[in-house]
Figure 1 (cartoon, rainbow, N blue to C red):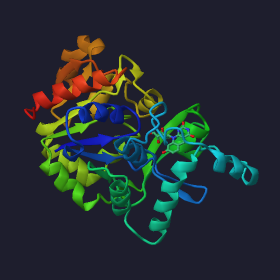
Figure 2: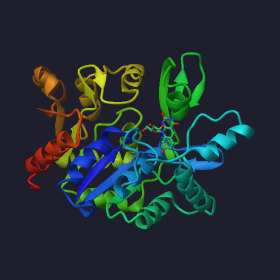
Figure 3: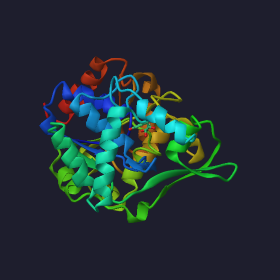
Figure 4: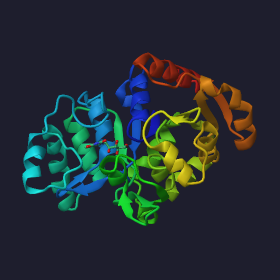
Length: 311
Ligand code: FO1
């Protein structure tokens, strides 16, 4: 079993490379649930849904969210009643939010609902939300506003000066019961190339998960989501800065240094390997990690599996 900690875009691209080599039964994903949001009366779990749509072949691979060829007629009509519509839910995508919200309202656990959706979509990989209880990433702006991550990223398109980031409810997060045993059974655990502050951060900040990684760093490997000073996707740079971290592979390695033994950077950052090794104690290796096409992700998957003696 190979297990991934995943956020929205970078890690799903890497997982696609692994799926060219492994069967889905051999893959488990712990998806960030701190991007989850209540909107329009519905409970939406963007990172979990991206993983569900990826494994079921439904994912819109241009955007890395939502269903391919979906339409937005319901949302357009909703705008007639509610002008404050800024988060786009496709007509087919809405079915998942309706199904999940009804079950949550009846008191069912998020992980069981995800499991049911996963089975109904014919997915054989294991997929878990990082927390059963709702947690959410919030941004405090320099103007003192306290907004949800999705408001920051989608409503304001990331054009907000960030003062602080915090994960509301993180102390009360509940890890789904199967997560720790899946991690124990895994030959390799991969911290994917997702945003370390708002995608991976809310997973590794959960105490039980953090303790598991600290005890099992030998089989854990992290992939940098930053090349040079540029993130592979999303708002990583501004968020790292707000956390007083440099937005480079070194800055990311410093976040993960107690949680894994190996850190993979892009070939362009080869020149910084010894500095990162010295400052973090990690083994640092350089590969091509910019997933321009599936072969780059497949090659990286092949390398990681060979390195971990899985192939
Ligand atoms: N991202 C956008 O930039 N605009 C949207 O309108 C949007 C809608 C959306 C709906 C469902 C979903 O699962 C994801 C959606 N996303 C949208 C992506 C999401 O905001 C983020 O990219 C992730 O949360 C970050 O991992």
